[in-house]
Image (cartoon, rainbow, N blue to C red; front, side, top):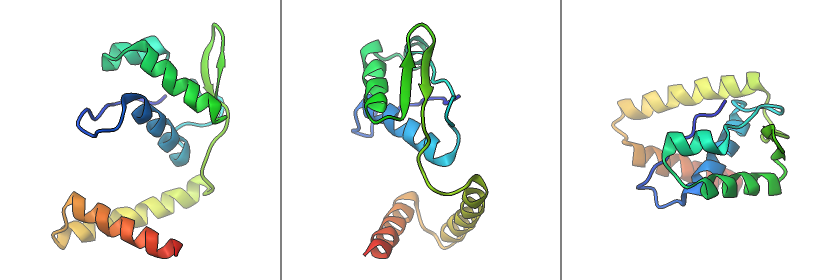
Length: 126
């Protein structure tokens, strides 16, 4: 099950943070088709947010075809996103972790890592 968290200083709306966290969990394989999302009440109790915020996030995920609500049962993952197999993701994750360690040893801060990674992704897409 996913464990939601909030970054209140991010400037990203709360419902979008929930949507992004579900999508990230789907990409990483943490959530898989058939998995149940926490109930709105569970999320509200954990994060101290308005229930309508959780429902808005779940509606957005449902609109995108990623989850489906089953009355009286909950909200369930309908499909996954991302193309790499779990084994390929594990290899890539290990490689990226080694890269991050090297970057930290070279003195790069989080902001530097994000900037460098983003630049390389943009260059590779061009």
